[in-house]
Length: 281
Length: 66
Ligand SMILES: Cc1ncc(C[n+]2csc(CCOP(=O)(O)OP(=O)(O)O)c2C)c(N)n1
Ligand code: SF4
Ligand code: SF4
Ligand code: SF4
Ligand SMILES: [Mg+2]
Image (cartoon, rainbow over all chains, first blue to last red; front, side, top):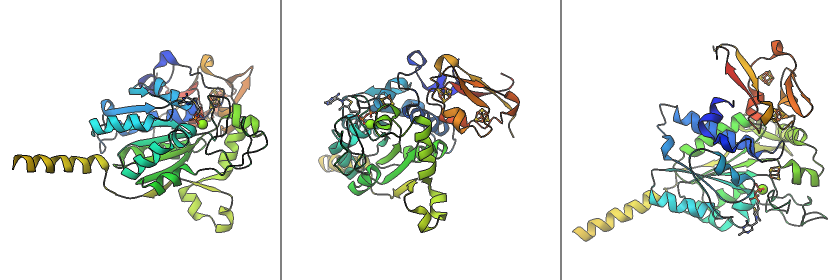
């Protein structure tokens, strides 16, 4: 008998999921379910369950769309944001949430990511960022740190990595944030704000892949990888209370940028309304 | 304030990753034969941190009366 939360929001006949022991994906998927549950039950934010759409691409992380019990669609590798764009344009009232991997959204799907951000289309993108291609056996991704090892970088990665949250923000996203597995409660709050945000919102959630990234880089097991997050990732309030010296080598998790650029479907609707008026007149 | 909650473990779903046990503030959980066990129910403070970070939803709190 699983918990009420799992009963309510997951397809329990598909559980337990097939992810490896200690894989961060399960924690992020639960964060998303809790965030939605809390928004549905918050009287100030009338979000209806039937208005939520979950869209994913391909990868270990993208399997989350199959486990979560909402209107959901598991699409093709890299194209989750493209499918989500169609859904949002067809029915702007929907809360379209894209669950994607670092490879899915910043390698093969990188172009979709920057253009959805540039348009400020009202999607919420949650990146399960484990710094690797998990599903296909540990090839380096655009977020694999420089010098780290991967199946395709046996002597160390020559590339410099993307910071996906900064990439989205630079491309025009009006909400950009980071979360992680260890600070799950803080990450749930960030996901709630991202869902409520009208324009394009992105949350880059630092995940863990103990099986490939962890093993290849001698990062220890899932517990060791979470201890690293605890000791190196710092939520906003604490981060800004730290001295500059203490902040060195630490990374902020929290909302990085936030503004009220016009949202794409609203601007599009204005054009449609204006054209209808001229036609009639 | 809410009442005390009871900890439930679903051994069939537990993959023995050890995350819950490592970060339990009261250190009342342990992994035996690749499954989590609650060593001392009295010491559990129902904080829910194990449930929050369990990737497999194998450990969670329920209200006592259930
Ligand atoms: C068009 C296409 N190219 C390549 C693949 C093979 N492929 C499947 S998943 C994946 C990468 C997954 O990495 P990521 O998005 O980071 O997800 P993770 O498995 O790490 O969660 C690749 C290259 C594919 N399925 N389709
Ligand atoms: S390979 Fe990595 S990302 Fe995929 S399920 Fe295993 S731990 Fe998770
Ligand atoms: S509820 Fe808190 S104290 Fe109790 S087992 Fe879980 S983490 Fe430990
Ligand atoms: S975190 Fe979950 S899966 Fe991992 S040992 Fe604890 S109960 Fe088992
Ligand atoms: Mg990945």
